[in-house]
Structures are given as C-alpha cells and as structure tokens.
Length: 372
Image (cartoon, rainbow, N blue to C red):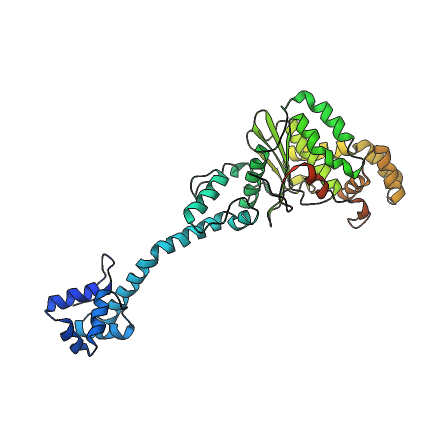
C-alpha cells in the first residue's frame, strides 16, 4: 500500500481500523505483529491516544505505508481541531493590521472583546464600513504633509471627531453671524483666559467645536468638515500646547468654514505651521495667510519688524502686543515663523492653553472621555 493523502480529515485510528479490517487482522493479532500492547492499538483506534513517531514507524513498517503517512494523518487531525481558533487569530491579525484597534481600545472608542465577531462589528461601525477590505468614507478626503492619502490613524481621528461633533451643542448656523464671531473672538486674543470663551462663541455662531487628542504617531493639527450643509465643524488636536498655535489653528479652520470648504469632503490639516508654503495647496496657503492677518495685520507686523529688528526685546514685544491687543505669545509665534528669532527665544510668552480650552469644549482624550 503506497503513501496517500486523505480527502477528508479523520482521526488516524479510523484509517488503522479500516486497514486491519481489510487484512482480516484483529487488534490483538496486530499488536503481536508490531510488538506493542493491545491497549495501545485500542486507544489509537478510539482516538484516545495520539500517534507518536515511534508508533508511526511501527505502523508504517507493518502496513507498508511509511511512517510519514501516519504522522501526516496525526498532524492534519490535530490541526483540524484548532482551525476555528486559528481562523479567529487570522481575522484579529487582519483587523489589527489595518486599524489602530489597540489605541482605540485604550482611548475607550471601542471595548476590548475576545469574540472576533463583536470586535469586528465595533471597529466596522466606528469607521462606517461593512468589511475589513472596505475603504472608510473619509479615506479620499484626508491629506498628509505630502497631500497623499491619509494614514488610518488620521482617519480614525477624523471619525472620532465626527462622532464627537454629533454630541457637541451649537445653535443654527448662519453666515450673517460672522461679523459678530470675528468681533467676539478678537476680544479674546489679549489675555490667556480668552481661550476659555472660544467654545461658547462658536456655539452661538452655529459652528460645532471639538478637541480630539491625536493618536500616538498621528500628525494632525485640525480639520474642517460639515455634518450637513447647515452644520460646520471645527476639530483641533492641540498637539502643540501653545497659545500662538491654538489661535492660528482656530482661525485657519475658520477660514475654511467661511469659504464653505469641507462640505463635499473634509479638509484635514497637517503641519499648518510649516514655513514651506510651496508644498501646500492654494486653499491652505490662503487659510494660513488669513489666520496670520487676523491675529496681527501684516502691515502692522512688518512696520514693527522694520523699527526694532533685530533686537526684539521683551519690552518691545510686550509693547507691540498691547497696541495690537493680542497676547505676546502670538507675536513671538509670528516672529519665529518668519525665522526672525530662534525658537528658544522668549519662550516664556508661549503659554500653555490646553487645560483652559478643554474645560469648556467637547473633548476626547487628554484624560477626558466623551460619554457616548
């Protein structure tokens, strides 16, 4: 009898039983032939005992099959008993390989679950997909520094921002409210506590405002998108906890809202503080310039630079900031961005704002969790 591969997976004992019956041998007789205890033959046939290499050698020699045949039968049988588990492992590996499942569980976006069916459903619902190979709806809208497709970390951040925005309060949006928004935000620029009032000002203007902590390894500053044609959303990451970065990011996104950008697909902004404007799309260059102009008008800033460059002393910066009615950190940030002073200069003015902003805004992360 030559070596063969079974079409179906059965315990090796069933094949042994068939071989003995075909030869008309009893278990006792076969035990005598191979020099083994009858109990061993009985337990192999009943599936109570596995085929060891030693037993496989004896079976192969007696039945002219070769030991490999019996070892293969045993291996296939043992694998067949654990295949459902292995399938679950493969599915989990595929899920973790595509989506940031571990970080999503840590942030409380989904719950840990050993059941792959439940875990997959949570992840798919979060991203709005039906299968692991389906592309999330935000995929084509996202932009990296190179303005190519976004990473899954960025898409996850955006999906969470969308979820948070749905629970964020806001009155009805109207373009007629813009003049009031600009005037009220302008009044908040001079003192650090002004950042506390941003959420309520935007809420009254009908603009939803959320703070979403970025996932580890996810470079993202903010995003502008619309839940529908009447509900704009601004989401910030606050990955740079500085007064100048906060205000610049906010007005950058507000410029997108003002131009109704992000309606058909979200605008995700990464490295909006970069001085390499040549690599940015025109709308990003425009939004950056608009934010800078609103904070410190270009004509006034250039006049200040012409008068005091290159000294930029504390008194000069504070004096100019008071005349502009903005926080000194905003002036320092613009001077740094123009590379007129090193990033190590006047850092005392670059006050932190994250703790103040998150007290009034709908926030996910930074040790705060949304009650979904």
